[in-house]
Image 1 (cartoon, rainbow, N blue to C red):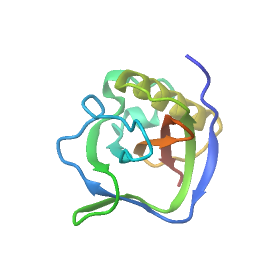
Image 2 (image 1 turned 180 degrees about the vertical axis):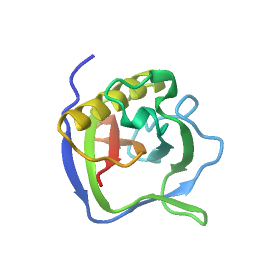
Image 3 (image 1 turned 30 degrees about the horizontal axis):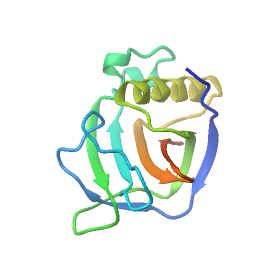
Image 4 (image 1 turned 90 degrees about the horizontal axis):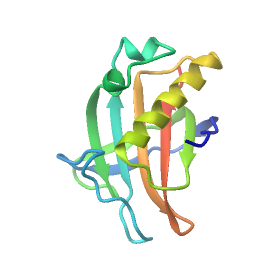
Length: 140
């Protein structure tokens, strides 16, 4: 698979979504046009795996904390403002590819001696005529 450029991103404003119980990486309808709602997934990484340079793929993501869809509704979830290690692919990734790139982002982050939180946010949006997959890992 292609390389995943790793950047530091200072997100100044939180991105808010409506909570979408039952939605997960394996069953989500990805954005297909400008009218499609964005999707946000938040994972609590496995504590042991989050500290390893060679995490086990089947244990890495840990628990899905929440899934969100579209604009803000009554039950809000958000990607908080803050400093993140950020990476994106300018295409829609399936759940297996998301896991692969999340681990690559993790390894690159550790290699560059970044201190990272154990949360991972994966966002899907439609931009410039295609679906984009983004990875946000909070920096400490």
